[in-house]
Amino acid sequence: MAFVLIFALLLQTPDPMALAREAYELARSGKMAEAETKLREAIKGAPQNALLYSALGGLLGRMDRAAEARQAFAEAVKLAPENHALRLQLAVRQREAGELELAWENARYLLAAKVADAQVREFARDTALELGALLARQNRNRAGLAVARQAAGYFPENAPTQEMLGLFQRNNQQNVDAIASYRKALELDPESPGAAVGLGIAASAAGSPEEAARAFETALAKFPDHVPGKLAYAVFLLRQAEAGAAESPKALELLHDVLKKDPNSAEAHYQLGSALLSQDRAEDALTHLKRAVEAGLDDKRVHFALARAYRRLGDAAAAQRETELFKQREAGR
Image 1 (cartoon, rainbow, N blue to C red):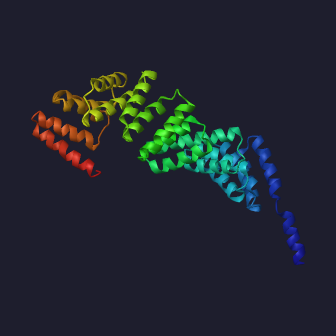
Image 2 (image 1 turned 180 degrees about the horizontal axis):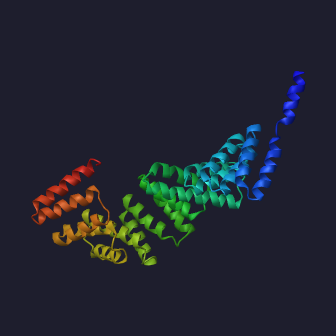
Image 3 (image 1 turned 60 degrees about the vertical axis):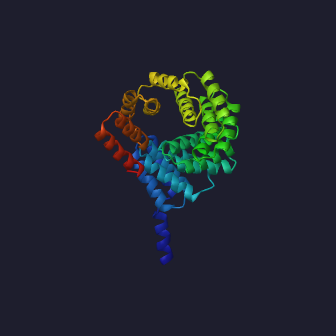
């Protein structure tokens, strides 16, 4: 009798795949909410079926419920980690949502499994570059270096990847390695202004001023309108003068050039203000230092320079105010 009851119950239990087929037909006819109900019912009947979660993720995506769609695809990948198509679907959605670290982790899985075709490799490379740019903006240089090393390992002949590696090596004071990475980037793409300027910055930081000067001059000749390159070259020349080299009027020319192209460059205003202050042109210096603050610069450097400028102009109260701000910024406040 008990067997008959159990069998009768089984006959009444909807088949999960039949429910999934119903959901598909409902979705085709535009009945999304009903399709979702059927799919969730199917999942209750077969909670270990990764494809049902995948179908739910696709449906939720069509319904503009991106976060729930990602959750469904994540569950599908958890149930079927070797299903590379599901993992790619999850990675694509993670990247679209800005979850770049998770997207790169899944992209790396596909690369390591050696199943990635040209399209998947392109997706993985672009994800790594996008993640690297984000980490650079966040000043997460150790994490950025790890990503850049991984990306360079998978894409050794890609110029932007080598340039990204050079950037994070430089930001982690690995300047000799950065020089090598920038050189390789330039071999792969001689038309990259970022790699050309990065080489100059890395060579300067590595204590090779002659190589830095050559790199900056080459970059300036090849990319005369590249504003970041002009600013970096100007900073290099000013640092060389501080270290005892002959003062170069070219530094001020470059800074003025930068400000013609970008009048709100806070860093250019700060550098020009500092340079003018070293020439005892306190009033001119003050103008540019104040412009730097107006443009958003608020670090200890600019407040220290402002304190010096005000002191030279005889404004003791303003000098004291800037000195206090300098101390606060130095203390991390």
